[in-house]
Length: 461
Image (tube, rainbow, N blue to C red; front, side, top):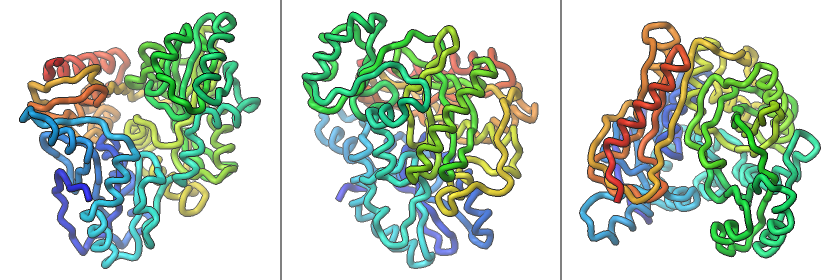
C-alpha cells in the first residue's frame, strides 16, 4: 500500500524488539519503557522500532520508519519543488501503518525470532489493525475503551455528581445545538464552551458568545455536541496518572497548562503555582476518575484537565484517555525526584496491563521543587516556509538529570524541528521547546528564547 518515506532500521536477530507507533514527540518515553521491559525480561537485549508520521529534513533517532500518505499526496500535487510537511489524522496514519507491506513483513521477521511483539502507543486506536495479529500485544489501554472514554458527552454524563462540573447540555445534532445556544446565551452570559464528541488541544471546540459564531465554526456538521457554561478562570491545571485496577490509581503530578484564546493548548509548566490544598484536591478528583475508568476495564496512563477560578473552585474539563503531551517530562521528573530505583510511568503502565496491579515498590511523588520545566508547542497559524534549520536535540532525559544534580543551572531545547526549505501546512507543529531550570524565572526565559529561535526559521506565506 503506502510507501515508507524514510527508514534507518536494520533488523538484528539477536535483539528483542517492541514497536512504538505514534508521533516523534513521544519517542523519549520509549527509552523508559525499554528500561521497564528489561526488568521483567532481564535476559533479553531489548530495543524498539519507532513507526512515525513526522516528515523531517533528517532524523537523529535510531530505528525510525516514517509513513505519511497525506504528505506524499501533497508533495505529488504540488508544483513547488519544496518538501511538504503536514498533519495527518490518527485514523489515516494508523490505517496506513496497518496496511503497509513493509510493516507487515517487519512483524513477520521479528516474530520469527521471538514469541510476541509488544506495541506501545501515544494513544491506543482501533484503527491500528496490526493489534489484531496473533502474538501482537498492546501495552496500553484497550483501544475501544479509549474511544469510548475520549467521547466528551460520555465523560460529562458519567462523571456528573462524582466531581464538580460546570452546567452543561448534550445536543443531538446541529439544529439542536443552535437552538440550545440561542436559549442559554442570556443565562450563560460569560460565554459558552462548545465541542463536538472528540476534541483536543483546541481543535473541534470553541468558546462562543452567540449562535452565529457556532454556525460559522461547525458549519452545519450533524453530530453530537457538548455545550457547557464558560467559567472565567486563571488556572488550567492538568493531572497525569495511571490506572492499575478499579481501586489503585497513581498520581504522577500536576502541571499548569498554557491556554490561549480560552481553549487552545500551547504547552505546560511545572510545578503548578496553585496552592498545595488545591493540588491535593485535584489529585483526589483525578483518583476518583481513575477508579471509574478502572471499574470499566481501563488499564494504563491517562490525564485529566481542569479549570480553577479566582476563588480556587475546581471544575472538570476533560479526560484524556491516553498519554499526555508532557508524559516524557513527567517521566524525567519522577526519575530525578523519586530516584531511578522506583517505577516510572511506563513501568506502571506495563504492570497495569499485564498484571492489573502496580509493582511492590511503587511510590507517589510529592511536589518536586528542585526541577522547574516548561514546554511550548510551536504550531504554524498559516501555510509557512522554513528558511532555517535547528539541529535536533533528543537527549532531554540527560538535561533533566544535570539540572537535578546541580551540574546545570538551566538549559532549553528545541525539539523535533522539521528542517529547512519545507512548506509547512496550516496547523502543523513546526517544533517544540522544552526548558528546564532550578528556578521558575530561568525556565520561563528558556521558553522565550526557544520560541524566538524557531520564529527565525520561518517565513509566513
